[in-house]
Length: 268
Image (cartoon, rainbow, N blue to C red; front, top):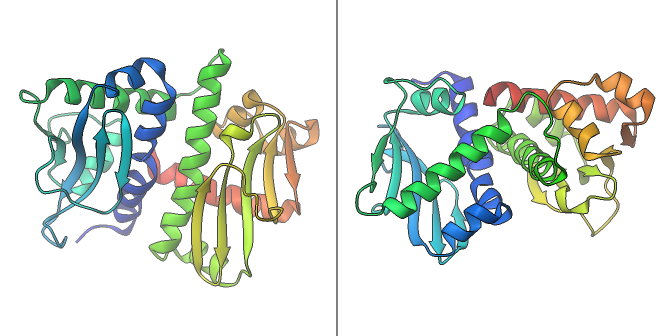
């Protein structure tokens, strides 16, 4: 029997963090060049006797650099696979607790070394971005980091809702049709949102264009966004100074901020 927080964390890693591999492999030129030559199925999985297929997994179908992400789906014969002995080991590994008890079995290393190497380098880049403690100086890396965090947080909140997380489920159940967005002035490419209604939720990437979002957590710059995302800036002080703009009632910002912290806490 798994502890509830382990289940929550595994869902965030499988369905919110791992999908960022596609974002990174697409946005980082050196990685994109490697995947342009690859056609393969890559999978990350965790064994579990209670799972329908005996394991939980997310896999990627890559065709000469074109990615297709499959959430909550086990591919029986992937070309490359990182297979953890259970979800607890996987959670610990992605939280940086790397050791003999948490290392996965690495399948396909010899036969598909090129695909394995590209996957490993992308995972390491993901770890560098999400594990950072201070903002990078170059704008290109700042952009990628903010994008990854916005995608992770919006998807993570939605995944927790789908799992019945008490506070988040209560929030979505009582809500009419509303969109909560994350944005940075002059950088629409990093935008993300979550749409909620009557207990249901859907995370999305990019700007929500069908209507004006009910609430937007907006930053005046990439660096200001990273100050909050990396917890090196105080939200109240950032709001007073105009680095953080709440397009909507402050009470909604505090609520959304609490859910952001919940996702961050489970993923670290």
